[in-house]
Image (cartoon, rainbow, N blue to C red; front, side, top):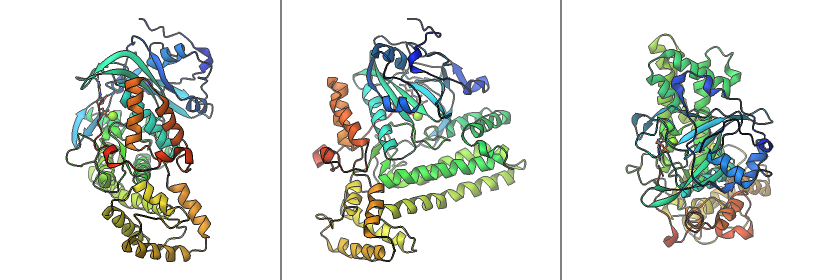
Length: 492
Ligand code: AMP
Ligand code: MG
């Protein structure tokens, strides 16, 4: 099969302006996606397409399949595999898009720029020993969870389509292959900067940093020390992002530096999962043996990654090395306080608090300790507090009663009404999260029996996570012990 680059599917209205390919050659490899045998659309995100100014509703399904498999390239695309490096579980490695192709950057009618990337698109010069492909289950998983994160108001890459390839992929068994179309504000990672630093060419780091600033923080271009200001921005975005994860009980699972974006979007939905029973040591990833990326360690892991990021910028921060190190250390140290600020402000909202009191931290920590001791469902527990009625079992407990009285007294010390507090709480405590067992049952039906009913239902339930809709009641309850998922997998 050949790939006619000029082939146009006019109705969709792509508007590609590809800036990444103007970086030095070493940052990417020119490469087309490898065609697949029998592409078929599994799921297509028309709402996202619309928000990007793309018209997918009039696209023939066969054309959509050709497009989102990479068998036919859109006009204006300049397909590349991006080079990057990364610290994986603490160890530095040269990586790069081993199974992804960036088709190009689409400019939406709002003027915003979005990377359009195919994931699972075949081998590239960065594939190492991998087959360049992806299985249907994990690509649907990324689709569902990334769209759920978006609905939860958490910055994330988005998912435009999943297309099956008609080719099996060999994993623990032969599985149906698939390609995901990922949409991102950019795919520039901490690992991209580590790659530039590994080239041992200060000019390369400067070019990448200027490019990233131009793309994400153009208001910093005229700042006195723009690289320091940029470092602070990235730290701010990551502190805010990880606080948001913590507030909804999200565990990323593989916080390697190659999976941390400069834009502050959540990326790489491999082994991620939402915690059900509250336990700060929760780990789902099958490869995270030492709990490096467990729930409670996520802020620390983010700060560690940001230290690696800061190191790559040292030559740009100050001509004198010691001065540069001091500036970087100061910025990276500030992460803890910035994170704490975001977390505390989010927790106050979860508890209906409009005002700030010094004892709020203790109030929050006591609740969390009680939830841990009593193995309370994290999402369900907070949502129960957000209902007018005093929560029933398992909240009938002396420890909880004492906490509840303190909380009520605290609420009474602010001028806002109880109703306002409940509104605030309901807007910040989701009723519905993509619970592992619900995600798993949907993926098994889709991948195993080609039945997408549950996937669509889950997506519909998730699209309004702060509404406790009676028809989606079974998405709001915790898993029975027999339904509980204990492990997730990545690199699939
Ligand atoms: P991840 O664990 O998804 O963050 O991937 C880490 C690295 O492995 C990236 O460079 C990926 O491109 C690469 N990779 C993961 N799966 C495959 C695969 N099936 N074939 C080729 N490269 C892969
Ligand atoms: Mg990755």
